[in-house]
Amino acid sequence: MFDFDATLPLMAVQFLLLVAVLNAVFFKPLTKVVEDRNDFIRGTEADAKERLAKSEALAKQYETELAESRRAYQAAIAKAQAEANQIAAQKIAAAQQEAQQQREQTQKELDQQKQEALTTLEQQVEALSREILDKLLAGV
View 1 (cartoon, rainbow, N blue to C red):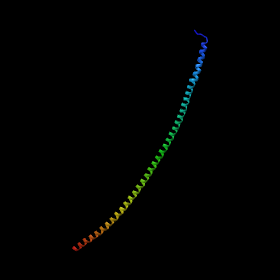
View 2 (cartoon, rainbow, N blue to C red):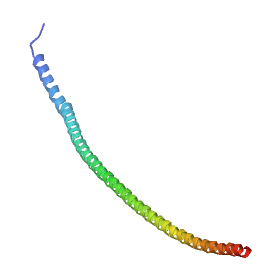
View 3 (cartoon, rainbow, N blue to C red):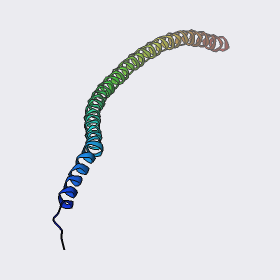
View 4 (tube, rainbow, N blue to C red):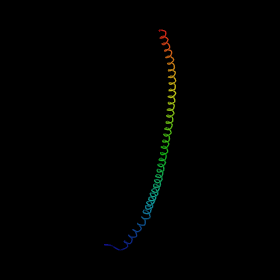
């Protein structure tokens, strides 16, 4: 069935030479390409992780700055509203004071006109009373 003559060692040598040639020509370059590809993927992955960490840090920083600016503009709005309320209160107080002064002035003028009218009325009543008295006495 098997012949153990010179063909078996020759086949073994051919097989070993084929393996050596395939290893040198095909497997080593293929292994180098696969390793280079793996190195590139590892490097790209590390770079992506680094960029992701940087972008997350920047996003956190921007969120912090945004929150600070929101607090600042809310404080500015509150301050402006307080100032506006204070100015409005001052103007209302000034208007009320002016209205009170005008009321007092008007009341004084009315009192003065009333006094003048009463004085005039008293003079007319006196004059009419004298005329009536004169007519009554002239008719007796």
